[in-house]
Image 1 (cartoon, one colour):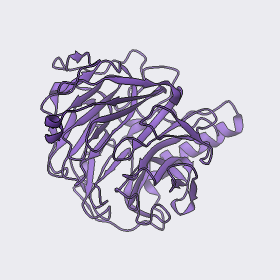
Image 2: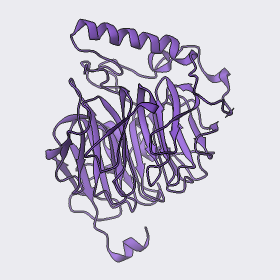
Image 3: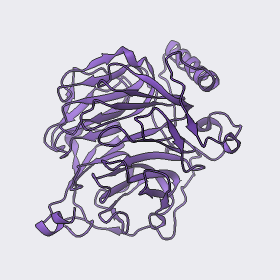
Amino acid sequence: MSKWFVRKTKTRSPSRRSFFSTSGDSQLFLAATFLTVVIIVLGPTCARADVDDVKLVGDDQADRTASGLWPFGRPGLVKRDRDYVAPVSPAAPQAVLGSGILGPTGRSWTQQTTSGVRAWNGIACDATCTKLVAVATGESGELVYTSTDSGATWTGQTGSLLAGYMGVASSSDGTKLVAVALSLHIQTSDDSGVTWTDQPGSAAGTWWWVACDLTCTNVAAVETFGYIYTSTDSGVSWTGRAEPREWLRIASSSDGTKLAATDFSRIWTSDDSGVTWIARDSDRWWIGIASSVDGTRLIAAANSDFVYLSIDSGVTWTAQPALGARNWQDVACDSTCTTMMAAEYGGNICVSDDSGNTWVAQSQAGSREWNAIAMSEDGTKLVAVEYGGTVWTSILKVDAAQASRR
């Protein structure tokens, strides 16, 4: 498989591309170039026959620029200059050396070298973060990788396809998994990743991210330059929702009823399993988003902007200025969004254990190209993957008093 995708947002290395790049093979290069042109020119205007008509509220076209697909055309959205430095707030948090510190947010981090150095794109875990699943991309594609010991050892699952995987989701028991990749059908597993089933009902698309309920029965996936798709049968059949946008990430409540998705301009929410969508906060370059189990509390990251919190299912949002305006890439939270985590691409991971009142940079993990993060339901286990690096894990041992406050 040619190297279709390398980075989803801005990069700091001039040798990387933000979206599509190809191998030296001329035929594959031409095919990739043609597909990219088709996506750019025709993607937003072409409708699929199986896409339901849905109600979209608050989509004021007046505030959407005429620059076309913003990843390629919106001025200042994705800066690629080699000397570009993201804005940093003077109030950005000071790093706290977390080795051995079990204070409010101090964490000890372990680099899991057995994961291998890869272009990691996504990671997910079960409720206890004992079973992990991570996906990456590479010149010839990558397998899906799993761990059953909280990230200490990793197995490349040969039952999966070699592909440029973008995202992955897990059921709360780690048994059912869903993985998405560019130019493939959506892939599912019901044995913790040992074997995988190609789901042709999803069609082959530019799949970007995926989320599911606790049982991975209700699944939602986003296709950049495409639609949001939902499934109520663990990924066998799919229904197109919303409308073509530059979709990036999606999050789900524990029952799959409440969904929240990001594109390059807005946050969108649904309280009917994706049938209808409402536009929320706009004019930010949204990327990562995560949800509490009931879908009431949300955390979202705006690239070259702030991390934002919502306590009303996405209706209103509050910035976290203490974190600074940075290259935020992904966010995660525990079941109640009491413990939250935000990762900066080319910077630090920051953690809050008090619903966002205070944040601490996890300097022991270092400043890296963090690409995706996840955590256990109780917030004691954290996992993160770096693009062009390894998997990192953190386990916080809490006493009875701390546990009672979670």
